[in-house]
Amino acid sequence: MGQGGSGDATLVTHEGRSAADHHGAVNPAVYRASTILFPTVAAFNARKSQRVRYGTHGTPTAHALEDAISALEGAAGTVLAPSGLATISNVMLALLDGGDHVLVPDNVYGPVRSLCTKLLPRMGVRTTFYPPRIGAGIETLVEPRTRLIWLESPGSLTFELQDVPAIAAVAQARGIATAIDNSWSGGLFFKPLAMGIDISVQAATKYIVGHSDVLMGTAACNGRTLAKIADAGSLLGLCVGADDAYLALRGLRTIAVRMQRQHATGIAVAEFLEAHPLVAEVFHPGLPSHPDHAIWKRDFTGASGLFGFALREPADKARAEAALSAMMDELRLFGMGASWGGYESLLVPTYPDRIRTATEVPADLRFMRIHVGLEEPADLIADLAAALDRWKEHAQ
Ligand SMILES: *Cc1c(COP(=O)(O)O)cnc(C)c1O
Image (tube, rainbow, N blue to C red; front, side):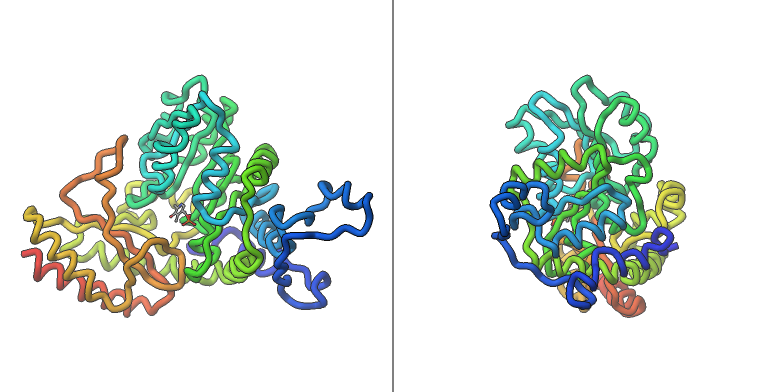
């Protein structure tokens, strides 16, 4: 486990670079470019056939990143955007027309829920949020105008896995497009396109960049959807800076070693939490106790460093808040902040019970989301053990 697909470590080391094109340098140059010059009127008028023709359509640096991601995800091509959320909105705007209907899992990344409830309705697009464990039962929610089934597996905050091949089969039989948020696996531990999904999107901000210093989104598309997603990206003017593309490509070079380490540390920390008397539940698909562990073993080759756990909360609200502050405010190694996928560890409280509409989430649990970085596992466990001691002191 924690290996990635066969040859992935080799692939991320070698794809998306060509020393011969860059004076022998190992890495592609950073091409900061808006204007691209053409030597003749004929070449200028034929520029649409050129991959490098204007900055918004990508520079050689951005294309190197696209090529490497396409190889990793087994895609016909990859479309970049300046954030994960921008990639997701690009895919939705590309595939949905007024009057259409989209199916979105109830545990979708929060801002995507807002996109579906605040922006898409203004364009006449309706969303149904579905229970993520619905599997082939998704069929019962399909309407005549359903044009897109969105997936995210594991889903945000509560980490349910989806039966991706079952949902892809339903969609394919009806000619409905499918797109999945694959950020959790980094494109390394899960291969959605090989399972019949049309588009695998990632917040490259997370594991691809891997150092908490660049925002980026990738849409790895099959041949059926690539032109539509690329055209919409062009129409919307979505593009990424050359420096950001360079840093994302540099992050990608080490994704296999980082994620193998984070897989192992994540399992060790999850096992520590599962055995701890204060912890009510651990939401990590790599644990045999996880309800979707069988799906994880079937479809994934590893786990990222992101998972959840829950503490039983004291009924008294003031006491519950005091316990949370005592636990969190004195953490030594875990930072408190949005995002994940970097080399550093993070811990935040989450509130899934406030946003879900299609699934029951117990309200008496203190949900936490943890991201393990590249620190020594024993140091992380010691920091958490001390934090749980502080919780206990204030919760009683
Ligand atoms: C962070 C995140 C995104 C959005 O990425 P940004 O680059 O921050 O816009 C999308 N999906 C998931 C699951 C995420 O966690």
